[in-house]
Length: 187
Image 1 (cartoon, rainbow, N blue to C red):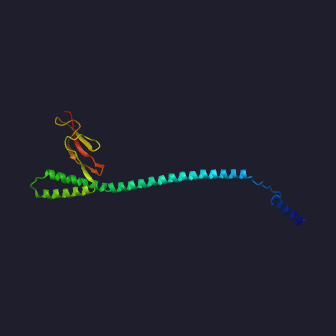
Image 2 (image 1 turned 120 degrees about the vertical axis):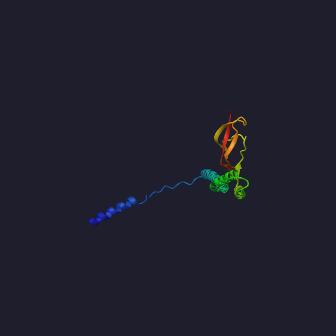
C-alpha cells in the first residue's frame, strides 16, 4: 500500500517538472524585419565603437599628460635637487666673505681665504647658483630682497637699497635665499 502511494507521488513530481508539450514556434522574420534588426544592431555597435574611440582618445591624452608631468618633475629634480646642500654651504660662503672684509690685506692668510672662497663660488656656479645683484641704489624688490631696517636717507631715493647685510642667491631661475638689505626712506 505504501509503495503505491510512493509511486503515485513520484509520478506527480515528474509531471510538475516535465517541460510543456506544446512549444510555440517563432515565425521566420521577413527580409525587411531582418534588415531592420541588423541595422539596429549595427547602429548600436557604431555607438559602442564611438564610445570606445572616445575612451581611447581620453586615455591617450591622460597618458601623454602623465608623461609630460613626469618629464617636468624629472627636470625639476635635476635642476633643484641640490638645493638643500647648497643652502647648507651658503653660510660658509658668507663667513669667508666676512673674514675677507674684516682682514687686513697684508695678512698672508687672506690670500688662502680668498682662494678658498673663489673655489667655493666657482663650484656653486657650476650647479647654477648665482648671487642676487644688489648694489646700493637698486630699487627694493620684495621678490628678491628682505628688508631688515629702514634708514632715512637724503642721498638715495626712497625705497632703494642702502646697504646689504647678507647676499641673496638664485638657483637657476628660482630664488634660493633673498638678500637681507637696508632700505632708504624719506628723512
